[in-house]
Length: 86
Image (tube, rainbow, N blue to C red; front, side, top):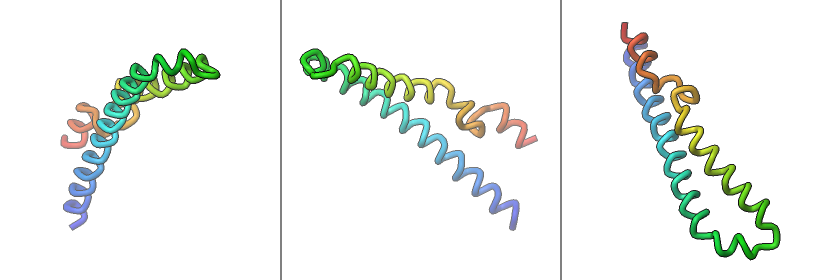
């Protein structure tokens, strides 16, 4: 019973982590598109540099989270999964 529960929990946990990683990737793409579409408004804004830096930081954080998802979500690593199965 415990093994069955543990296996189910592991599968659900992995699915949630994959979902979160994909969500951050999609958020990064959407932020990038919004950033590109806002360029004309950003240049005429009251504080354009601050807004551009905030948008670039948000896109950068999403990219870093996706790029290093194997560190953020260790259960997504192949070696971790192989180790657990062995």
